[in-house]
Length: 352
Ligand SMILES: NC(=O)C1=CN([C@@H]2O[C@H](COP(=O)(O)OP(=O)(O)OC[C@H]3O[C@@H](n4cnc5c(N)ncnc54)[C@H](OP(=O)(O)O)[C@@H]3O)[C@@H](O)[C@H]2O)C=CC1
Ligand SMILES: CC(C)=CCC[C@@H](C)[C@H]1CC=C2C3=C(CC[C@@]21C)[C@@]1(C)CC[C@H](O)C(C)(C)[C@@H]1CC3
Image (tube, rainbow, N blue to C red; front, side, top):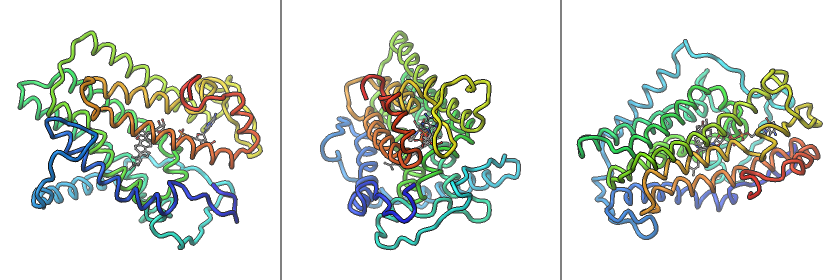
């Protein structure tokens, strides 16, 4: 958070960057979906064809999306769900700044940190439910379509479905952990997160399954086993690092983290400098990127398209790590510099 009274740093390139992304993101997703359906599946270059306008509009598709959102909203409001404490701000309250000089930038990044109607939190709802669950549903539909087309799903399709079902299932199982992510703590709920949660995740993250439906990839058991191992290593690092930090943040005296070495900070919060968080400053990102590689490998190496997610995700996490570094430097000052000296690498040991 920028110190009170200072000019908050404009991110994502400010209004110009936000305006460019408003156009570029939907266009990129549209291009990817067209390329995935084309024979050549050539990621770089013009779209293979532009559909007629009537192909782009279906009242049934709109009804299906609204029904899906309504179903998820109804499930979200079920009284049985657990209520978890969110993250407190430093002075126990929430400061609000009327910022009206850059509407496009506000529209893109969002200004409301926790948009709610009664207890319905739009950002929290969108982060984990319609998009993420929709993602695995699309994958399952593609797997079933391949079974119809070829008699049975390919091993590559099974792997992609399985890996990504594990990832979404893990996210829902550790639903409470989302409360400590940057999106919930720091980012407003604007176009970036709304489009990201509801469109980009379900339709871009299912790209490998879409590619496999139109471009079957033979995959032998030995290579499949290696890919499963890669995904397992990635998940082990991802889950281990996230759980270690979340456990430490909830209870530093927890026996699972009590013996870890830490650095004290002026805010009273301590920073882990051993365990996963002593290896690199974002070990969870490393695990996530290794899994992203495992999701692309079943598609073979004949096309760049299935590796779009890995490329995009690397850029997203490198940018996100830089944003988090700035926020942590503002939160912890000298303690964070001491942490950076102790743990010099950001995401990949001895590389970055
Ligand atoms: N699949 C996808 O599209 C995406 C997945 N992700 C995944 O989401 C997960 C969460 O990532 P993200 O939201 O970026 O935030 P992180 O989980 O990386 O949390 C960053 C925060 O953790 C705290 N922290 C950092 N270092 C330490 C330390 N050494 N000791 C104690 N606390 C520390 C700081 O907050 P504080 O000190 O205030 O607690 C910091 O701001 C990651 O696993 C990432 O891979 C993220 C983006 C996209
Ligand atoms: C280019 C573009 C539209 C960017 C928007 C970025 C969003 C798609 C991502 C920002 C942070 C995310 C997280 C997850 C999904 C993607 C977005 C919304 C996440 C819910 C995936 C599952 C993980 O287990 C997670 C809960 C840690 C994670 C939180 C961050």
